[in-house]
Image 1 (cartoon, rainbow, N blue to C red):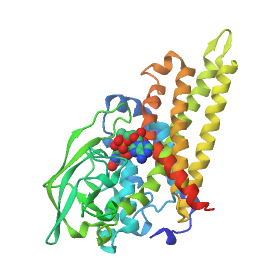
Image 2 (image 1 turned 120 degrees about the vertical axis):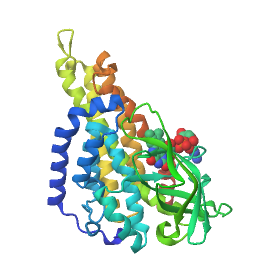
Image 3 (image 1 turned 60 degrees about the vertical axis):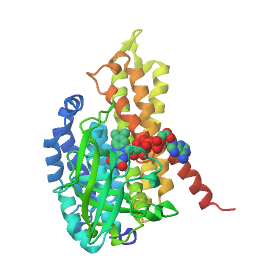
Image 4 (image 1 turned 90 degrees about the vertical axis):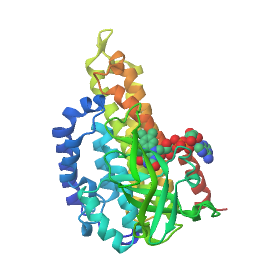
Length: 389
Ligand SMILES: Cc1cc2nc3c(=O)[nH]c(=O)nc-3n(C[C@H](O)[C@H](O)[C@H](O)COP(=O)(O)OP(=O)(O)OC[C@H]3O[C@@H](n4cnc5c(N)ncnc54)[C@H](O)[C@@H]3O)c2cc1C
């Protein structure tokens, strides 16, 4: 399935999946999220249930055993998950970007070999781009793959890789021709399964986004078959990654809507029960102004996410739309988390409440899947390209 052959959206099926995810979140996640997050525990039991629900294949085509959902419904699922526990969305997201790269650019053999096992969650993993010396400037990656007979031998280190410890397969961006100019022509993407020469090293400690494993991956003379070169052609890796990142940015934007919404919902409730000077704080104009801004941000962010997801589902170029959604929704999450903390006063600062978690989770959204500075640059470039004089 490529952009041009996306199936029509089955709205009834998508509504049923959303309902099922809602019940799952209320029953299985909401009661334990706070504790798992504070203990920084990888949620093994929840991941098994997510597998059983088919969430690891939610945007993989039905012909490969996935649910074949639209990006629009996927974004709603991610919003709802993130409103309860954002870390869970990361366990699915980078796995699905890897899956999307195979689905869009893989050979028929690669699709048949990997997509059914990605969809079932039998193989879970993510996307390995970032290195200790480069994140934004991906064309500077130093991990190399050297052809040797029917294999390539990979050496290098990736860092900050989500699902790095518990995941077993990763789409890995490497240089196959380090001298190539422009640099992206020498870059390729491989699906690498952990084994001799490829393992994770240390777990990285973080401000928030706990429970999900962020780790370094080390390639030490790792041999991978040429059959694992995505698309079977060298030099297309950067392009394959960038098209996958559109989906990733829609996901991050949807997380932003979820976190911003959770901060709003809790603030609206708290403002009605917390009283100062003889009345609920919701009746003080200073609090009303915050609530109004928070609610407006949530609605505006969701509309931008819907617009980007629609463009993606229609197979249109959507780097500007996804960039706008990601930029606005992540900043909305950060602002709403801050406003929620002010509204909750000392309780916002307390580890017994959720607000401090939103406050720690939200900044990641401004960094991951391309920083917000880079989103602004992408948006501006697209504005000029789409409006030539
Ligand atoms: C919790 C977490 C999970 C992550 N998961 C993954 C993952 O699964 N896979 C993966 O590959 N990576 C992952 N990352 C890495 C993430 O994608 C990078 O951190 C991000 O791309 C930014 O790269 P950097 O941190 O190296 O910042 P840098 O590239 O060093 O940028 C530093 C600052 O300079 C700015 N900047 C850089 N270049 C420009 C420019 N040209 N113009 C203007 N400003 C510029 C940036 O916006 C930023 O403010 C994760 C990171 C975190 C924190």
